[in-house]
Length: 213
Image (cartoon, rainbow, N blue to C red; front, side, top):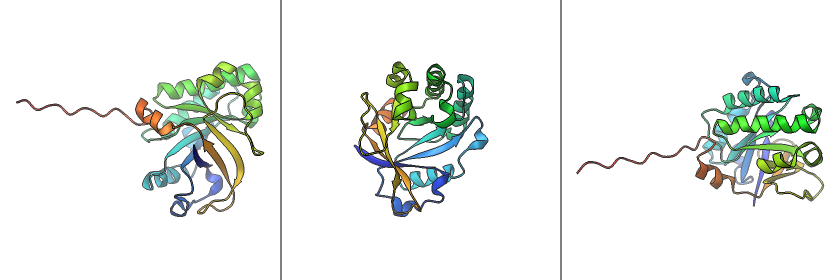
């Protein structure tokens, strides 16, 4: 089990030197919506600092989609923003607020479409959602198919299925961050799974050719 945080523009400029050692991993907001121009203004800085200080990281993309076609556009925008980078944790589709307005069939198809597009591009895809809509608006087969990151505050997670990560608070206080930050517990060894499967930018190493005798 690992303890981490998720950050975005809302945390402003993070002092990663002070933060280092207080979070096992960090999930970074890559952006939102259907265009690569909607990249989070702190994404590059946050990603580069994680790499510089060797803090394992993943990413998430905040959805404004209302149907599967818009979810596809969001997936393509996300891929464009994260292309060429390496992530030890999944790339999550953050579905909340207005993106949940379409009902069970629409929300399920949106999540399936986004995650499938990410997988085609070589990424380990997951879904972020609060527990209540996860249980009521996401088909069971979709829940089982992709990595789940579930938000549930109040001290305990009572979701009956398996989740890889639990966001348990939005009021965390850590060195290097001004104000509060979301805190998470990860139950899955995603870095090992992702590296072994050669996903998220971790490509197979070519074997050196043997020299002729």
